[in-house]
Length: 257
Image (cartoon, rainbow, N blue to C red; front, side, top):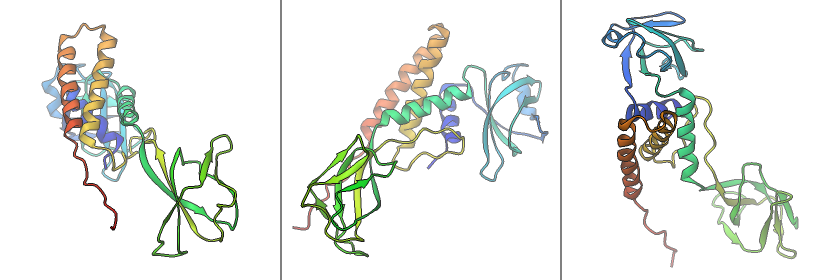
């Protein structure tokens, strides 16, 4: 599981001149690193800075000034000595957007909810707000483990009222039995830099797909005036497609007969 902070940093490694350094001194608004002297003054001005505090605090901020061996910025955390800097070709909000675009293109995945409990002969149940299109309904055969789930085939989803409805004469006859829903879910949009990407997502494929989006946005901004960006975009697209093809499929889950 990786954070939005890490995902955008990895995208930056692919698309730009990302520099990873270690600060020799840090104040509330600036850091100093002798390694920055290898770049011309202003190289990172208006660029992006990845900071972490070593205790789970993350921030990605704009660089207001690069002068000699010093970067100036504003952050809400007390940064540690390790950092990453990118020049002004990409913005933090742009990189966040590309990761979210790539996540949403992955599409729906199967999720499970077990928060509903049967009420004897009740036809309608209000679905939890997180539940999307229901694919399967199962009812526990026992009130405790082992539950011995039984698939229910006489139900429909009322999208207008947001309810699960059992057909008349096919309601669960007793109270206290867990109802298990398998439904379509979409990865939530990531906003905070500490937000994590769900474990079902292939991180490497996601990062390369997001990088393709970032390069496309860069080409739109420059009106295709950067041949390097066009060439890199083509290579990144190829890599992204190859990673998708290489994803394996699990063995079939056979019945007990």
